[in-house]
Image (tube, rainbow, N blue to C red):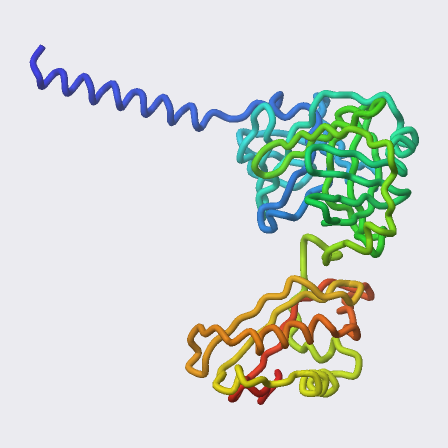
Length: 356
């Protein structure tokens, strides 16, 4: 065959394949792909923000939407090409396969198909099964009391959250509600209970990356919660959102003037600090209980270039902030919230010249 015709035949084949793939890409989703029960994972604009909702798409054209801890709501749904309509709201259907459902209106919403693993115990039996128990899986331990679950890892308590159980049909879900100070706040992360029998607890969690299955074994000794709390690390009350506050003095008992006096009274220059000049910004979070944590230190010289101060300066300032117990939680809508704030220090010859 003449080389010209070979080239022409090759181009024609590639073109036909491209058109075929393009048509495949444009093929609409079939509504049968949505049938079943989906668990919300997260909202795109806040990747760590959970979407604690169940959507059951039924063959009769109805969808049941149930937020954990709330009553179920019934809507009608239809699928036209890649447009999903729920009553009067329209969503772009970005992805729908065996395990993943992704829709978009203003933001992307990610759902995962739940595992077909019915649990016979009812909600009361599941609560009794978990209440006042301890479970271990590798280096991770869960301690349940009547209303809170303590996550323990690497020999320290890393998180305390409130917990609850809810069943939907034959399926069971363990979910967080509120925080370590107040169990009455909004619902957080949701985990499907795959099995809860004898000394075995099997939990399955979907996230934006994939599925995380953990099988826990029951421990004979119940945790000493008082000792656990003594060793707990700093925790945010709201893991999924935080307020940015510019006036730290408003969150200190006595106000900004009293806060400045506290630093001036407790900071002591040393012979190692006499040549230190520049600016130090210490950022930190005040949680809903008035506790502080997640401190970050930013250091620059008087020319606004990165500079590492002697530890006699930075360590003192950090220690002084940690020693303060008169922080006032930030309040919004009548509720104490987590707030990120900062204190700015101007250092001249090792002395605190200005505090902002």
